[in-house]
Image 1: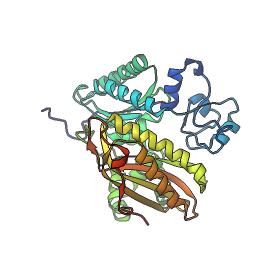
Image 2: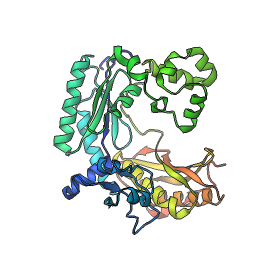
Image 3: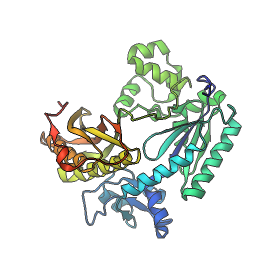
Image 4: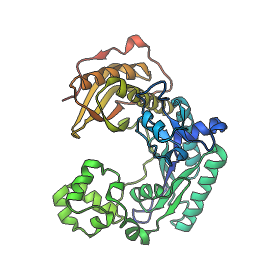
Length: 375
């Protein structure tokens, strides 16, 4: 076995595909090249649709993920709306991960369109060599897959992820160990993984708006105020985050996806198409990674930021899409029956096992019992 260097002397890359769904659609249909492409339902046919992603040409008009397709069409009248093809995205993602694996000591995929690479050994711990590796990766993605990606190179996963987002699209940002503190200082604390809107507001109340503010805050005081999260926050801000790139070895505890809406919704017809799209995307990831699931969980965040989850389990493991859709639909109706508006929905598959091929039939997956959780 290779002996991996200790944290602090590592070289980590975060590779993030640029406008992934839209880029795949443009690659498959070159006529879309240079046009403002929006992946989502055409609002003239489905007025309640939501934008899944938009090409950078569309983003110049202010079109963003989770925006209603009607609003996207208003901002960008010449937008080209394309229905999502999740099976295609899953296949392309697998091909890209296979390419990334050839450059990494260890690869940890993070969702369908990004991944962390530990390149400490093959770069010899040298950031100049790591930069060359990153350029080789960008060239390989461009030549083999006809798409672009943005890469952050840093001593930690958290910083590499922040760096990859800074010069999109087709960006490359290098943060050497001695540059970490100065690099992070002006960046918003909300860029740190795990800092959502609610946490961001809490930090703002403490006077912590930039990562530099966190760097200057007394570490012990932060831990007393925020517990383990305060410790994590300070470690990230100082470049001491020691989380490793973990090569998947068997099923994770769960796989999940979620979407925050641009405005709070309470109509089933508005929420279900987006939840259905996410469920299909998650199912493609499940098939690609050859897992079967037994539990489906729906997550909903209400307009007051209260989070509600409901879970239902099958009698046996399944790789089928239909149970995911039926159970998600049932749980969504239960959530919306309260009459409250939701700002986020998500779906999670858990109790995963490895499975070479689909083995279930519809008659075998009758749900058991009552919801596992819910409030």
